[in-house]
Length: 197
Image 1: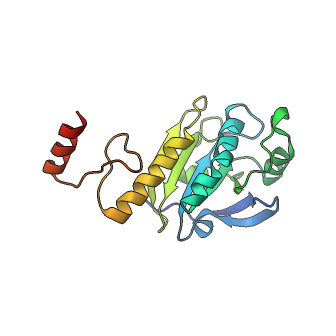
Image 2: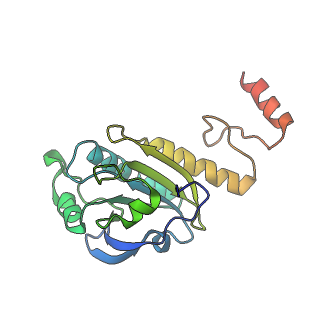
């Protein structure tokens, strides 16, 4: 069965390297994010090429995520020991530094199998998930291996979900925080389109 938006994120427990550098052998995304929005992003492998650019970009945006009350988790099929070594490697040597979010180890590939994001080669696609405060996936996007993802687009999705949950309105194409939204009527959509044309 294909994993889809609207389903609960799996409650699989696995090892993770925490922001302190310690290894938590029983890390659960659902427990960590309980009551908060949570962003989980999978990447193929440690010590690669596009992956460190994404991880460093997410780390640079952590204040923006924290301001919105969002927990962030990175994940790959590498071991927690590999994650730890990568965190200790300087940026100019292909490392990522001491990032401020957990790095989950899905070595047994239980979680990535449940999500359906494994490549034929046994690594994960660049899959990103936005999970709501009740543990339901509300947004997901999966990129092929050469295609780095957009941190700003994930922040936009967080803002859109938060706006919808607070105000009940829906967010049109390219909506950004502070812009007009629409109600779920043809009249509202028509007025929005007429105004934005």
